[in-house]
Length: 238
Image 1 (cartoon, helix red, strand yellow):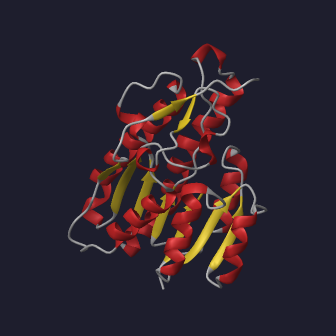
Image 2 (tube, one colour):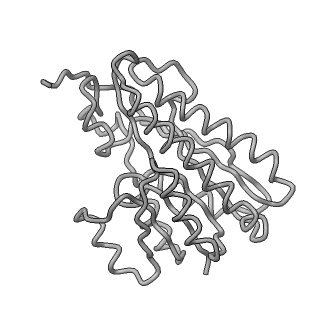
């Protein structure tokens, strides 16, 4: 049985990825700050799911968590946890900037480094969930897009380092996804048109497709967009 580590597993994209991997007969270690949300109760049905409570924004806590998992021979790492604060850059405080850098960039780099030797032994795979904002100008999301651009560049460079060891490094670039990710955004959210956003399940199914391909090929960069380009602009009351 193959073993996977999935961050952000308590909700959204990470939650759907964890479920999909469990249904593919993976043993899944799901990382999240907590598992108290109702939807995570579904994991109780799976004997092969192991919740790992960790705040990825806290480096010392992350290091202790990784140390506790050091004996596990992972075949797959999915860095899917993400954090965003939207707004004009001068209005984003330092604490929010640090948190975005820690969760979106620092944590994937640290996790990948920690388990890379094991992945080389197992000819494993690292999947980084980036964003389409990594490849374009993103006003009102300057820091978020910068962290995702950094993650994407890391993923590309890492693949060139480890491809000779038969390790795959894959970057997924989702567009607007229907999750609670935008709940604190006072500027825009997914449009009501179902063809104007993608779902977490779409990303999970894409990963399933990628993992079922021949070992001889690698989908290094995969962009997932909705059929239509529509964003609902909003202005919530403070």
